[in-house]
Image 1 (cartoon, rainbow, N blue to C red):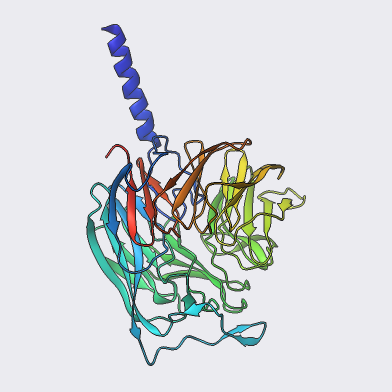
Image 2 (cartoon, helix red, strand yellow):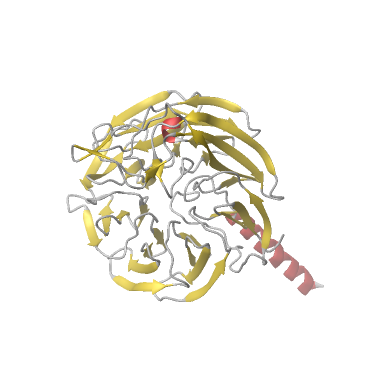
Length: 437
C-alpha cells in the first residue's frame, strides 16, 4: 500500500512537471521567438499513418507557420484569382537601374487573404475570415506566398500581418477588432516574409525595402491599431523577423540586416547600438544566448556573426563563421550549441560561446531543399525539409542521428509545438501529430 501511494505520488509529480513545462506556441519560432520549446512529452516518431491525430485540408497557398494557444491553432492563407487588367506591380530598381526579378509573379491577379482558426482537439475549422480581397501591391516569388508572415497572439487576440495588404486584429471568436496599415512595401517583387513581434501593448514590424531608402520599423497599438512610433532604416529589402532579447534590466529589439545589425528600444524605436551587417539578402531571424546575439545570412555570402550584447568597451563581434549557412532557414541556439542548416540540408554545429566547430556537413535522409527553421525540444534538434521529412538528431557537441519522420507532402513552414501537439503546415494541410490521440 505504501509503495502504491509512493508510485501514485511520483506519477502525480511527473504529470505536474510536464504540465508546468507545457507552453503555447504564440508566434513565429515559438514562445521565445528562437525555435526552442520547454516541453518534454513530445512525439519523436511519426508517418502519414502513425501518430497522426488529424489532418485538415487548407485552401489556397500559404507559408506562414501555425501558432497555437489553448485549444486553438491559427494559420493564414492566400487564394489566387483571375487576372485584373488594372493591377500592375511597382517599378523596382537594383543599383539604380530598373529591375524585374525573373521569379516574380502573381502581382497582376486578384487575391483573397484569409485567417483560419482550427480546433486542436479535432482538427475542425472553427472559423475562416477574409481579411483582404482585391489587388495586391507587388509581385511575389514564384515559390512564395502572400500569406508568408506568421501571425502572433497574446492569448486574447490574434494579430495578422499581410504586409502591404494590412495589419489586422481578431478576437478568438473571429471578430475583427481593428485593421491598420503601414503603407505600401516594395521588396523587389519577392513578396512578404517578415513576421510581427509582440512587445507589451505594441505590435512591431520590420519593413526593409528595395535599396533601403524607404525602409523602416513601425510599432502599432494592440488596443487600437494606431501607429505609436516609426523608425527610419537604411537597410535594403530583407525578410528577417526581429527578436526581443533581455539584456540586464532592459529589453532590446535586435534586427538582422544587410548594411547593419541593429538593436532598438522597443518602447520608442530609439537606436541602442549597431554593428556591421552581413552584406547580403537577409531572411533568417536572429537568436540569442550566452550574452550574445547570433545573426546569419546565406545569400550571396554565407556568414554567421556572434555579437556581444555588452562588449564593455571591447569588440562587439565575438566571432564569425563563413560556411554552411542557408538562405532562408533560421539558426538555433540550444544549450551550449549553435546549429544551422545549408540550403541543401547539411547540418553544422558550433560551440555557441567560442564559435569552435563541433561538426559540419551532416546530412539527414534524402537530399532536399530546406526552408523550415530549426526547432529545439526535449534535448533534440528538428530539421524539416521541403519534401516534408523531419530529421531528429540528439542535441549536443557529438552528432547523433535519431531518425527521419516523413509526411509525404511539401513543407515550407516551420513546426509548432504546443501542449504535446506537433503542428506542421504542409502545402495542402495542417497536420497535428500526437500519439496520445
